[in-house]
Length: 147
Image 1 (cartoon, rainbow, N blue to C red):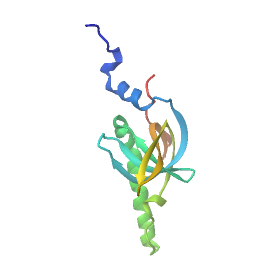
Image 2: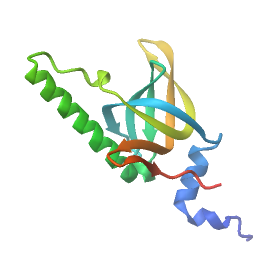
Image 3: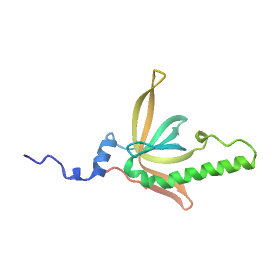
Image 4: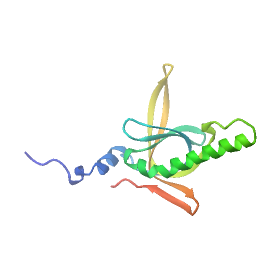
């Protein structure tokens, strides 16, 4: 029987990237909120905004370890906002009001979900690489998909 596998089929990272980033990669600026969850596939899904339109920002499975500095920073932002609200004797801000702007490279996907039997288009951005500001300037996390 002939060998049908290509050489990179032995590399699960390349196989995952081929499945996720089929349409190429674009660069966008978007706001990420601290609202997040982990999917059954091991992806991290954050609620984000682009031009005040709510989107899902997804950090695919093998990039979740690179996502930790961003998540730690978002948690620090939440704690700082709560402490400031306590000192000023006012209500804590809602998590959707706490936003951090990142520059990300990735691909778009549109999903249709039904809410009360009404179909709604939901935009998802799958991040391959992203830039955050740290004390020393900018730092880049993640990696672009292999060709």
